[in-house]
Image (tube, rainbow, N blue to C red; front, top):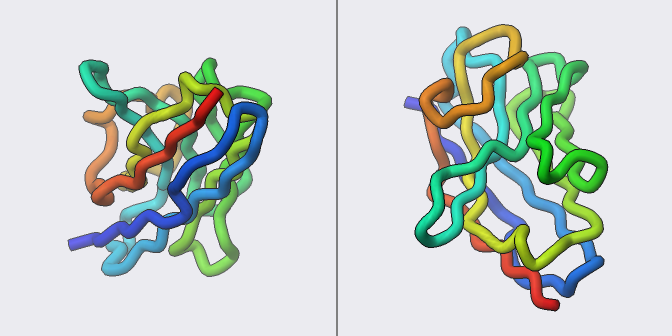
Length: 126
């Protein structure tokens, strides 16, 4: 089964930047898309960003557009989330995810995705 490991979480001040990474192993041939969700205590898991297999198509949640950037290494098994202009409301556990669909348009709910990492904590102070 696919195994996802996040790294890069930590603390940052409001307005600062942080870069998350996710390394995947055991990826099936049909697993194409990867992305990020986040979850705060008492809230549902929220879509952050997704990227297709080739890395040419990206999708972002409204709350992070213009501030976060998702990318994929040429080897296809590692993605990154560059987080800039951080706000306290960005504080959450960030989860890496993967899925077996080819096109990411409209894929913004947790049920769309197949595998999940353990999560990494991001804390933004004001």
